[in-house]
Image (cartoon, rainbow, N blue to C red; front, side, top):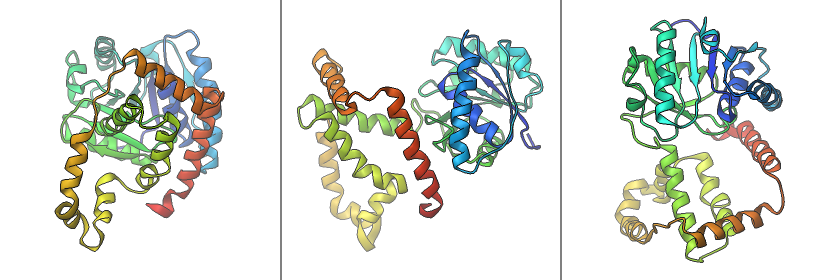
Length: 304
């Protein structure tokens, strides 16, 4: 992949695939998309229009061409890079990646999206497993820059990382595969404790969400947990923090809970989220989220 990617094949056009497509189009990259679902093309094109308008607010006005076909082989023809976004089912992905592998020249990188499955298990039926990587985004990928990369060939991973940087993403590379990668494990740890606080009746769903959004969440927009605690140590940094407050952190870890989704907890979560949403439909909440993400992205050069 020494030459710039000019055409990307999008395999799977749900929320993630459509979001990737919009991003590539806004960078002037042609997209050949495929999905067997009857309404996939209409969903993709509608999403691309909405997301394209959002990306234009960020100055991204490329005019990549969008094509769609229900036939996988046709979508892959001439592709310089493949972005796979099939449902999170191991057997389905194994079969799909093997089929993609057979249809493509060996040098084309295949980037698969999975939030929790292990890459090594997904490529067991592929003849060229080294060119397959996991490239896990955070939703929606056209607005959230993170993409987590896992692969067995360092050269392939480096080439993919370079491509993602060219389309404004922030790639991170895992030294070894791990269920949930990095970000989902961090997010799951936070949500586990948030659910535990609901289960224990410590606070309402809305107040727990507010505590995160108006506290740690604001700092984590600027820097991650390690650097945050480094600053928490004052002039002595993380070494001072660990010497003087490390023990209290361990005590907090030991008090963290392990909630279950029993009937009472599920009911409390559903009721709490309904109260926090205050009648606003998911589409309205998504629009508010996306508007806030765009505002943050406009500020990002100032806070990087």
